Length: 601
Image (cartoon, rainbow, N blue to C red; front, top):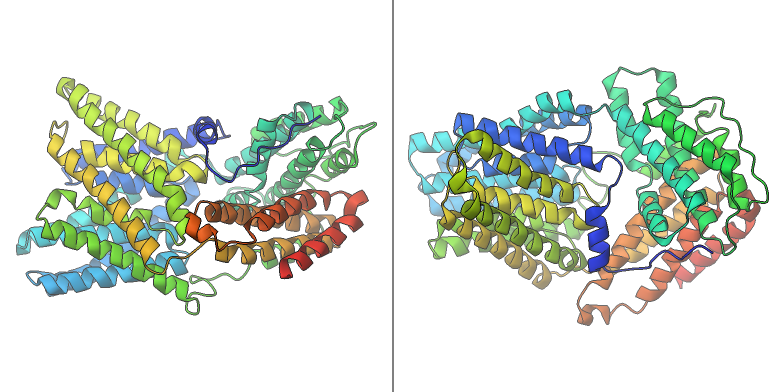
């Protein structure tokens, strides 16, 4: 009998360690390439003697992408956007130079604008990095209020983005794989895991399958979009891969459904062999055609459905209905989100973020302690919309900062005095970067710790040019990071505290909408699209419930339906798999309606 998947709402130590050590497909290569990029940025900064080279290294860590096309596009876009910002900053310098009140007003307005863009637009991954660089440049200019030095500060601020952006364009194109390669590898990973589920349905494998299912098809669709932009691949091949990515999600869902059945799974060597052979073809960057339906005997309905699905795994549909369903599930597109100017939460988030920034700014000014200026830039990295997210990730941030700071100070004490040349220094920085990159490329539940490790490590060891033994700077910067974390937490949990519980119902409505569409799909291809959308919606709902469960007891006291919402999500997860089985279709549709009635009560 298959063991049940561990049902955890909290990031326990054992679960955290599993996520840290998880050898997810492509994670090692992604980490090594990101480490290489950070090291090259540090080398360029050392050669050009760019001050505060920790910031370009951190920007690289935050913005580096998996494939070559996305790196090139992101690198060019970031530099173009920041060129506009630098042009505006030239005007701001004239207004703020030697005018403290104007500087305070400019810092507040810029923070407000960037936080709003980060909350209400698709600029979210970049908005905070731009804000970090711009606000830091204004603070640096204020500390050196001489015309020539101010101009140099602006030029260096431009280099803080120009160098990472250039490395993303040039190095990314050289060492990163094609988005098509990433797509075929992702499909192969789902096939491999499906075969493993049918062979050995243990709790750990089920947990890995659940995590992969909750990704839906969004990551693979992005790879497909970038592959189309690359213009190197045949249209027919991309159409087959488009259908195959949805088929891989459904295959994994059916294998998971088979693994959780109460009766032991019957050995299916033909099916497992077919899955393994298909995975091997995808791993080589190709895709299989004319797949013979494997023979299954004495199998459950889920296994029969899985075997039937494989025969059309890479056969694209003739109609446009799947594309229409895909657009319907993805929702409206545009730079701003649909509720950008109607939802007050976006403005409140911007106000809270700005309040945290200004509080940190006034603190290090009043204390006359320039070394803790890192508290200001930390605010742009750690701000999150709900209290549950703030609390659940606060431990990751603090532990990441402490680990990164310990690495930095330890290397200053143990390694720096013995480094004889720049090559040894770069090797040391690469090792520290690799740990940060490995954590950052892991599950989203631990990725924040990787960013904090990188930030603290870079700020501790990158002082001046070449090896340094200045521990005072490392101490001050780590203190600044910790202050920024605590002050941001204090502001966001005191002013307009937003509970994740308030968002659970909307996320569950999205899940039920996807399940209704799945049950009412008229073609197999359309069904596959809705199945992937349902899995992605389930992932969002489960994460929202996790965040709500992490909130303080006085807030959980106002969550009367939290446990029922959690149970409803578990039921919906089962229905999202059962809906792919024709024998259970009618019963599944009835159960979805029952869940919807329970949600509306």
